[in-house]
Image (cartoon, rainbow over all chains, first blue to last red):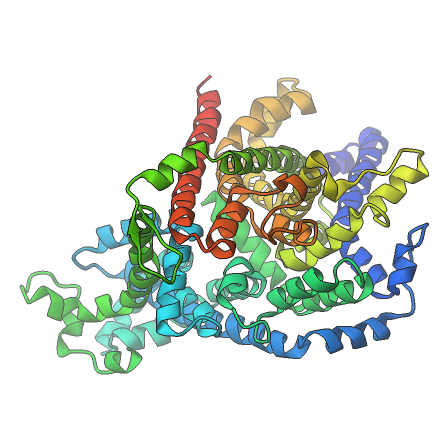
Length: 287
Length: 319
């Protein structure tokens, strides 16, 4: 705003330009604060522990990155646990996209007895805190024999209230009733309407939900820490925590290398989907 | 389930017409089938567990032997459990230390982003980045930044001639370290939400304020802030619900600093949040009955605190 005004009124140019520079300087300062821990992880992961422990602290990257990577791979099954993380986050994302969008389609576009009650229930479920259900969940899964396997992470997360609610809002406005009526006259059944009419229209919404779900699952920590009882078969976050727990006070360079490498896949996913995520997040909050 | 839906009944065509009375379930079964996965999962991993956890809280059980009826004694003990009250205090202090700076900084950032026309998308990307990174990895990084002997914070203090502080070893140091981590991770996220709210305020309103001779500060407090109240409320409630249930940040940051449990929350339990205490009681001590009572206690605290926050922001709106 200030910029636009300034360009129209020559006298005010100098003042607004100064303010504009001050604005960008403070914003860049904020960006540096946001980025700093990533930079710090790079610094630490490229030094040996004795370099890290010495004063003054190193502020520029060192030369021992490959060494740290090698000892990281010796100490934890990095790729095995990364495979588990990809497996869990990938399957959950796929299941959530399918189940949530299907249920959302029904809530957005169809009438049936009990609809309002079921939808209100959805909102209540949204509020139930995780630890209330944690112990019985653990007991049930132990009975089912799922404790220690990735099934314990995938199945309970396969559909969620947030996704259904969010997709319903999206579908209500994105899918036009005329389109559904037309496809019904053409003889399309419910599943065909879902697949050929609804899904193509709401692709951007699915992209948001997919990225959001994948990142959430990738970063999930508390439940995997409890449910994955076999220390040799865990997700990346749990493996990192184990590494920090056993070597965190001695081999900082290696632990930090693990933290850095665990961040990379997620940063790639975020870079690809950032526009979608940031735009839709704002929309969701003010709706 | 998908295969069952491949062959829908002939009645599907008439689903919009309510004039023809039909057996309700036969007419709508495909709709119920489509929403059923979520409700089935919720039944198995939500409703039944929540009910069972209340039943558990009335018993003594180590998860292996037989359950023993305890009545309300777990709750009675909970009320007199100084460790639990300590964890409530810790959680509230950490929440306050994190949330108020976070909302303040997020609001400033959002206002700046709203007026910076150039590079807006680059800034938004950079500010959102902390929120998508895993808490485990970033807590490890913050652990090294706050390390007593070689941490960057102490190195900076030393450079300006201030004595080292044992951040992860003193009650306030621990809380400040956890709160700093949370503030770092959530400021950008909240700034993006505030920004979306700011963009819904029509520019005519600002125009009118300027015509009436309002300065930027006056405009912010008289126009921006009141119009942002719903968004502020949303952010406050979300921060309360998530902040009061913090677990990963203190767990990873402090798992090496105490000998008795990885859920102890550091020396003197001064970083032990409510959820950490729940994990310690349940999964370290195998006290499933008491753990369930602690979980219900946490639930109550979160609800009460959310309502208080909500009422405070609402009431100010009425003035």
